[in-house]
Image (cartoon, rainbow, N blue to C red; front, side):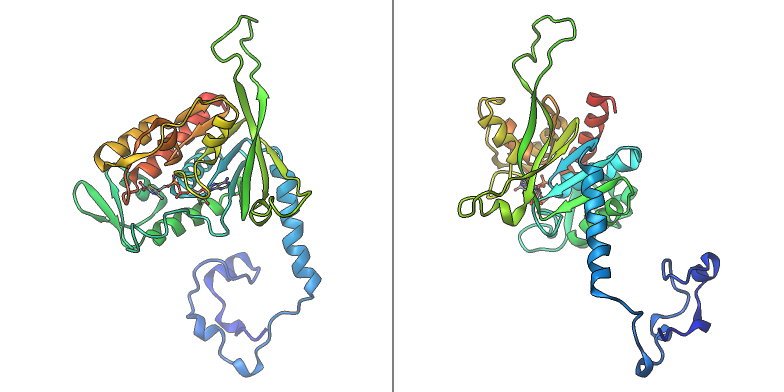
Length: 318
Ligand code: AHZ
């Protein structure tokens, strides 16, 4: 390497490792001041492969038994992960996201416009995460939805107790027969199932079940699953549609038309354990409850995520 060793930064001085974490006190351009003799540190291809695969398989191994699985990394799922992981660094949290790019519908504010609107009091979440916003009185505006999503994402991914499995689809739920009341009496929950984890597959594999054979899935066990897969569509409302198939919900209410005023309160207040072991939040809940949609205002998604995190801790005494 031809990095000029005389331009060492404060952070390098203190930890003595020579790595480039932390703010550089020298402009980057000054760090590379002789491109003609430039060269990267040496590498072998297998080293790169092993650096990736060793970590991924270690994560798969560790997270096969998780404390919480969050399905879907949209604005609600990420907000839930942030709240829960920050509050309880002792919990092992897996996020399973079907898309390659986490973030769901929160990369744009609405239509193809950049700015993201959140009604108060959702601004407290932005302050906690460290997302800057303009205060407009009853609502706040983040200058680009991507700033919100990338900041929450970076906070979540920086937490030791969280693993994001992206490009991975939840294609079924692990269920157990509800074990009933401890006293042996017939209780209201008897006959119901308890959700006990998720069944996963690579998203590209899930998309080819019709034309390829023998592509069995993988699993993650967890006492609590939080499902935030969004409203119905090619991917959405996954867990609650599966619950109908399993006869654990008679039918879905179906998302209703847009009413910002009422929709946001309803989604936040309604975020709950829908069947034992499964908490539903965000727009997936609108399909269960027949709640209105709110369109391009995101306060309900983040506070539904906060409520889902609280529900996890309350219901499961974790
Ligand atoms: O890829 C999906 C997205 O990132 C992911 N997902 C869906 N099915 C999945 C499955 N396994 C793993 N089976 C799955 N991941 O879930 C994420 C959902 O994100 P989202 O942004 O669609 O949902 P949200 O509830 O967090 O936010 C919704 C925001 C609103 S409100 C609204 C309206 O009122 O019209 N529309 C949107 C998008």
